[in-house]
Every structure is written in C-alpha cells, then in structure tokens.
Image (tube, rainbow, N blue to C red; front, side):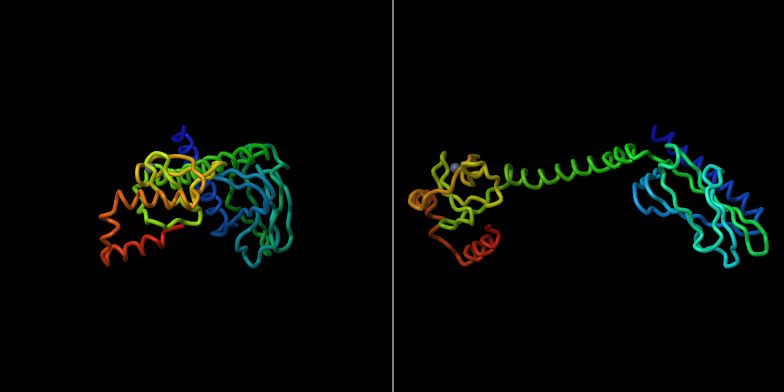
Length: 249
Ligand SMILES: [Zn+2]
C-alpha cells in the first residue's frame, strides 16, 4: 500500500519534471514559478482543504499578464502585480487537481509555469485527516504521561524516609507495617485519601493524613525498629538528608 503510494508520488514528480522541463525548453529559459499559500484551512501531505492563494513567486519585472488554470481550465486573468489567484477548495470537486499558470511579457512573448498538484479534500475529509493525525499523537502523549507518573509511583525504588518530616500532604501510617511515611503530594487523590505506597513494606493503600498523635506513635515504632541507623548519623548522612529533603514535596 505504502509502496504503491510512494511510486505514485514518484511518478507524479517525474511527470511534472518532464512537463516543466518541456515548458522550460520552449519558453526560452523562463518559466513562472508557482507557489501555493494557505490562508485558512487544512494542509497535509499533498492534501489541502480551505482558502488558498495561488501566486507567481519572483515574477519577471516585465510580466504583464498572468492566467491561472485549474485542470487546464482558465480561472482568472490578472493584469497587474501581485499576480495571484485566491480560491476555496470547495469551488472544485474533491480529488486531485492540477494548478498551473501562463504569463505574457510586455514584449508579447508567453511563458509557461510550474505545476502544483494537490488533492482537494472536503471539509469532512480534512477533519478526519486532522483527527487521524491528532488522535494517535494525543494517545502517545497520554501513554507517556502515564508511564512518567505511574511507573515510578508503583514500581519506584524506596524513597528515603526521613523521620518526622512530612510534605505538604502530611504523613500517614501504614496499615500493614504500622510505620509512618510522608504522603507525596503528587499522588492521586481518591476521595477518602491519597493513593500511596508505603516506602517501608511496599503496601499500596488509600490513606488520609494521619493525626499527629498516631504519627508520633508510629515514629516511636520506627525508631525502635531502625534505631541503629537513626542514632548514628554521620556528617555524610546529614548532608544526604539535606540533599534528599530538597526533593521533598
Ligand atoms: Zn508499610
């Protein structure tokens, strides 16, 4: 499917090269360079919908007249600069169209032009093309966001717990191991509390902010269990605690 499309594009390119090549040869080295500007609407790869301006880029100084064609049918004759033709794709049938122009110089000699081939879409088609581009993009962003938030939250390594330090969201007491920890303020709110993961035993639960009395009780429990670590704080440990606390919420 993709290959056929690429071949088609190649064929069209070759054809327009051939066509413009012939025109080039016949027009004494001069040919009008056509440009297409989108004023309003959709412009995808080779597909357009909306309000556009077909114009002559860098016209020769002695250019006196330009006729604009769509599919070989004369659309407009312009007698002075800027040599351009405004149109809406809805003026034409859906499908592929070839835009071209011819020019007349002050001395009466005529010029051909490059051609622009585009598929004109209906507004419905343009909308579905836009959705086709945006929806996967949004889905991708959504997945990345979930990965960014969810994976570290659920699988993340144990976050260093600092006794007596709780973030903006306050502390909680784990219902399984009974130890205190800080509730990360980024954790999702679940009505009765935050969805949190105990850094000590890894239990995931929904917990409200614990009362100071139960936190103190849990802190005592923690101090008893981990007393060797808590008591022997070297200078490095304190430095590390300060470092860690910068990342506290
Ligand atoms: Zn726990």
